[in-house]
Amino acid sequence: MTTSDFTLVLATGNQGKVSELQTMLASQPATQSWRVRPQSEWDVPEAEETGTTFVENAIIKARNACLHTGLPAIADDSGLEIPALDGAPGVYSARYAGENATDQDNIDRVLADMSDIEQRQARFHCVLVYMRHAADPTPLICHGQWQGELLTQPQGDHGFGYDPIFYVADQRCSAAQLDKAAKQQLSHRGKALSQLLQHMAEQA
Image 1 (cartoon, helix red, strand yellow):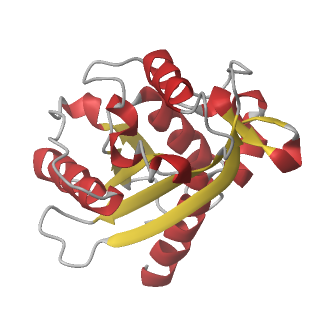
Image 2: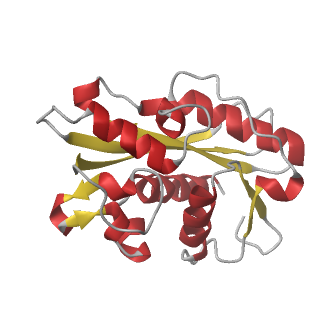
């Protein structure tokens, strides 16, 4: 899997996730030579995310990409979990304000829901699933979490999703104010990918 002829499909239509995962994989010596491509290059249809957990949805998306490309795939399912809202938006993070909601729509919904709540702890949760083929009986599943707090208004213009309202206390800024290298090291997605690559190397 360390050779230049290894092609890996990113099973997501979210360009923010594609960009982050490609950047992270390109920065790792063991994976620099991989051809890492989004599923859109094969016109893979979006999978219907019918799962009730991040793991279930990530498996659905990875299997869908493998099925349509015949190649191994990594799928990401992730979101924002707010204890004061009983874990919402959770698996519905991308469509919290509606099926066709924009990032700003979702941010506005969260800020409205949290307007009278003092407890503003939150966490990002990412699940990455690696499937070798569509019938893979033992996909690799890795989790990453990132603890933070919710701001009362957006700050910063980097990143995507809920990054502008996710405050990282030890960095004294929002996730949207971090540079790419810092976010890669600290984020839920970076942590999950680090674990996943370790497991992949062990099984190589």
